[in-house]
Amino acid sequence: MADLILKILAVMLVVAGILGTLLPALPGALLVLGGLILIAWVDNFAIIGWGTIGILAVITALTFLVDFLASAHGTHKMGASTRAIWGATLGAFVGMFFGLPGFLLGPFIGAMVAQLTADRNLIRAGKVGFGAWMGMVVGIALKLALVFLMLGIYAVAAFI
Image (cartoon, rainbow, N blue to C red; front, side, top):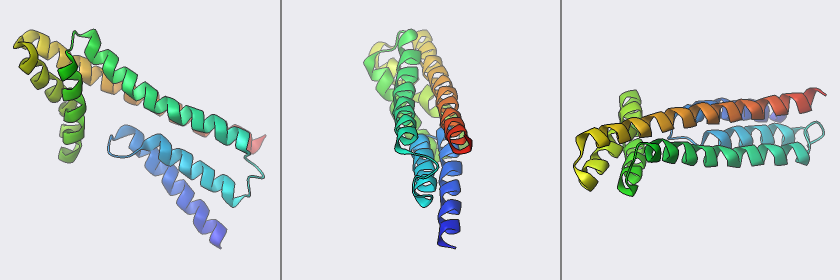
C-alpha cells in the first residue's frame, strides 16, 4: 500500500513538473526528475538504474541552460541592453503573480521598460520586448521537448 501511495505521489510530481515547464513559478524539470527518481526508488532501482538517472539529471540541467540561453538570445538578438535582459527576467517573475496575462506580458513589458530607461528609443524598446517574449516562448518549447525526452528515456529504460 505504501508503494502505491509513493507511486501516486511520483506521478503527481511528474504532472506538476510538466505544468511547471509551462509556468515559470515551478521548477518543472526538477519536479519531473524527482518524480522519476521516486518511482525508481520505490522499485529499489531494479528497473531503472543509476545510469538512466544520471542521463535524466544531465537533461534536467540542460533545461536550465536552454531557458537562460533562449531568453538571453531573444533579447540580445534585438539589440537589448543588459538592463533590458534584467528587466525581462524581473518582468517574468512579477508577471507570474498576475496569471496568464502577466505570464505572457511580463517579460515583454519588463524588457521594454528597462530598455527605455537605457536609451529612450521606443522602437528599439518594442523590438527588445518582442525578442524577450519570443525567447521565452522558444525556451518553453525547448524545455518541454527536453522534459518529454526525459519521460521517453525513462519509458524505454523501464520497458526494455
